[in-house]
Each structure stands twice: as C-alpha cells, then as structure tokens.
Length: 219
Image (tube, rainbow, N blue to C red; front, side, top):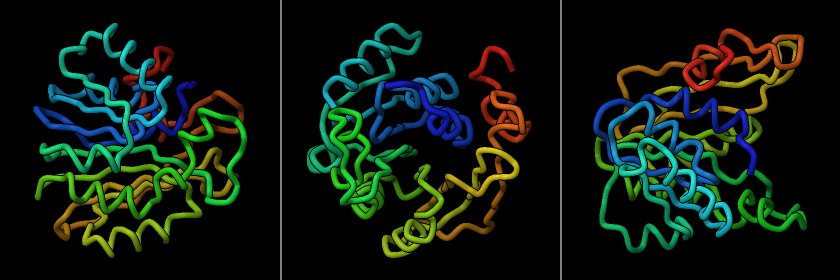
C-alpha cells in the first residue's frame, strides 16, 4: 500500500508527546505508527486486518530505529478488543472509507478499506472501550461523514476537542475532516482549516506544511 496524504496529515496533526501507550487501528503498512514513534517515546500497538499489509508493517517496524517500541497484530479491531487487557492514552485511526454496498473487486486494498469490515459505530464504541479515562481518540474521515461521526461520538459519550477540515486545494470543497476526542467534555473546542496544495500540483500549502514538515525531506 502506498503512503497516502491522509495518513501523513493525521500523523502530523495528532497531539502526541511523551511516554504514551498508543493504538493504531487499521495500520496498513505502518506509516502512522512510525510517525508516532518518531514524535513520542511511547509503546505503539498496530492492528491490521489484511495479512500482506500486516507483514509489510512488521518488516517496516523491524527496519526502523524504534523497533523495540512497535508491535503489529494481524487481526480485526473486534477480535483485538475482546482479548486485550491494556488501555490506551491515545488511539489513532485512518479507517475504511468506502460505503456499504459499493464494494469493489480489488481484493486486499478494497477489503482493508471498506466500512463493512469495520463500521464507524464499531470503530468509535470499541475505541472508547480501549481508552483510559484521560485518553484521546484521533481519526480522519471523509467530510461527507462529518455529521454521522459527531453523532457517533455523542452516542458513545465522547467529546470533540479539536477539528480540522481539509481542502485538497483552496478552490475545492472540503474532502476530509480530522477529529480529536476525549471522554470528558473539554473546556475548549478548536476548529481550523487545512489546505493540502496550492494552485500548482505538488506545491504544498503552508497550512499543510505546518503539520507535516518533520516528515517531508524537501519542506
């Protein structure tokens, strides 16, 4: 699986530092886990349903400077939540984003990215179960699911602390939204807008560079 803009932006935007227990849900080949290993000194568990992606993540972890703090589990969130005893300071996810009923036939990547293998309701409710009382849940989803996600948060007694709405370019509609949630109602709520590219393709906007400059060699 290729490294996508969504994962890089999520990994750069998430508030994480210090010695945290972190869970990466739907880790793919491990890019988010590696980014969090770079910005924290915590231990990171990554779960990935697709076997080939999980094997690639394990290899990527083993070749990294932070291999002693990274673990990959080839299983579903549902299975993981039934057996794990640990609770996490931070849970992060770039979840499946295709709607139920439009499954493609593109095998592994399609399966790994479909919401009918992990619904948003399951993602939120199981993440809540796995969080410490002071923990935070950070996720990126399509903008057209924004209201649905907020309803899921509220029904699971999770509260949005930060939100960022993403435009691919200045003149384009919002395509993604980032949320950071807590289990207690926060004293403040912040919302911002991030633009990925300027008018010229591959010329990145300053609001995107703000969060990703530590991960791109040419910034």
